Length: 229
Ligand code: PGA
Image (cartoon, rainbow, N blue to C red; front, side):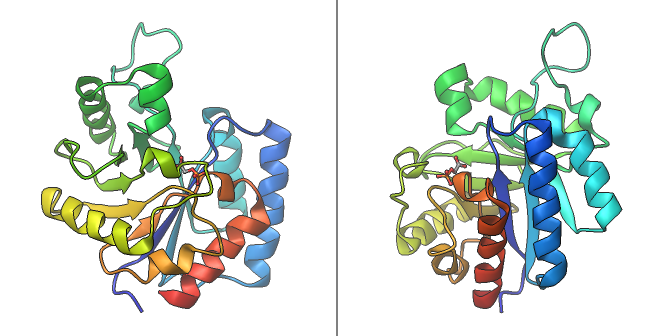
């Protein structure tokens, strides 16, 4: 068994209505209570769209499930006149984590390093932990991120994940660069391959997107990870 918790960070991306999110949670809570995962082995973080945070926080508390919430993106600006932005201050009581620099944010919203560094600073100021996403080991990792996610672009949503062995080598390089950060892998993680990543020395968790959208699949991820860790 790994000495530290194996993180499973679900990223719902731009999916689900409020009703769909509630149904997801009810189904997931039912599965959890039927077969509670070993909390000494895994830590679960869910990153839904902003609109779901309040509802999911209430449901998590009501059901006493040990799940943390995260944002998919965070404003690089402080609270104030920034129309449309979600500042770290606004969500500080709702989330413990925030994804920063996901490749889809970089690709579709032109987020660049300077802005991402400011996002990390804003998150830190509100005591929110950053999960900084990089696409390869050569990318610069700003100071202050708590988790670094290695997510090769060609593996995201393609069904073609990086091999666990290569992901582990990359994770080792990242660990040398970002000494205090946990390193997780993301890109086509499924219940069938999660155990391969959970076995690796330098990989401290995974960041599944597609496989987090269905509650039964998400639970299978957790069960299969705990068998291996
Ligand atoms: P995927 O997405 O699991 O659907 O490949 C991962 C991610 O984008 O974080």
